[in-house]
Length: 490
Image (cartoon, rainbow, N blue to C red; front, side, top):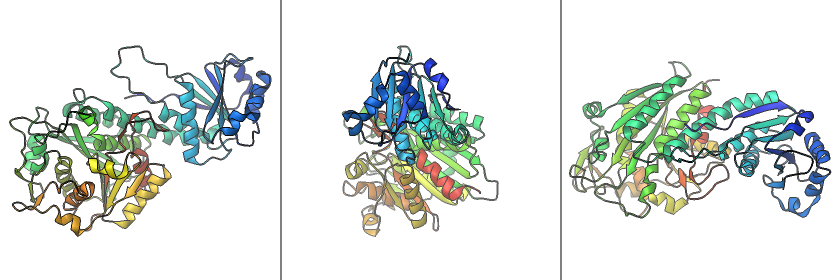
């Protein structure tokens, strides 16, 4: 797993500034008032910081942005970076500011003089998230990833807060690594092996092989992988942090390690991005890592279906009828609508075996979701107002875009089949909604459920404030927040 940047917190020590290497950052509010550390840097640079803060470039900065002074006289560092930020920024703004410092650092070692700025741990968290780079398959020497040192007035509080942020950084990096891996590396077997590593954190991990899935009747899931030589698997991850008397929250992820579309073959353009079609399973894995790493006082079960969707002489065909674990028959209209076939069996298994308190599934399920919401928001579908509102609140708190979508009988009617209980595709209109209606059929009465279509947010085509182009790790923060808000024992 890509290791997050090393972060340490210390009380402000002005004598250490002269010996700093790499870069120094100072935090200055809109008013231009310099704190203790910034004043010392200003004196050492013969007034350069004060001149910059009084100048037009700083005035044009928005909160969370950085002005850099390259190779300042009087210091050995390569740059002094001035971060414009209020003394008490909200969490999202503090993380944005930290990410801006990370981009400025470019892998160099950095000393941040936060002075009395609160919360400095949030700044470090933003720095950590934006420092991510997936370099496992580059043959050149690794780019430098220098340590981050934060000096401020309350290092103990920052260190305490950082314990949780460190766990979240690791979980998000795990998700990003999994989503970034090519399919010839991250096979279903390799994916399962990496999830077994969670045992080191105290997570119980069980791998169900194809024979067991056949015995359970998961023929909807199994049909997806019939055209591939990679074996279909279900991995169950159990974190029991609240004792045996509480039913768990079940997180269920789609793990299609590569999606050609099967016999309903996708177009060639852009097919290489289908290595990310296991983004839901990647998010579940990262969330389980973060919860275990921070010792969450909650019971959470992560279940992921791992499969590869390939065309071959043995592949499932359009027009075939398969039987789900629930017993419902499904007419396969489009083999590229495979994620819902995977999810319906894993969801049913989760409910019948574990009797969870609530269930959330995540999947890069439909291109229609991207048409509707772009890369700004995940689509949220639910049968339970309380759970949906709780997740949306958690997503807002963590600045992860999510938008509630409608459901209803008219969409359900679009999934009727003349030869089976249901078909797996209702066509192009309302494609993300009809997919959710398909899944709702496999939610037991009284089970609070949220479906998250993350097709637009799991992997993005441009840099974001907290992540480079590519895998984002979207959802780890929101799910962790939801667990803390609604499922964690006091």
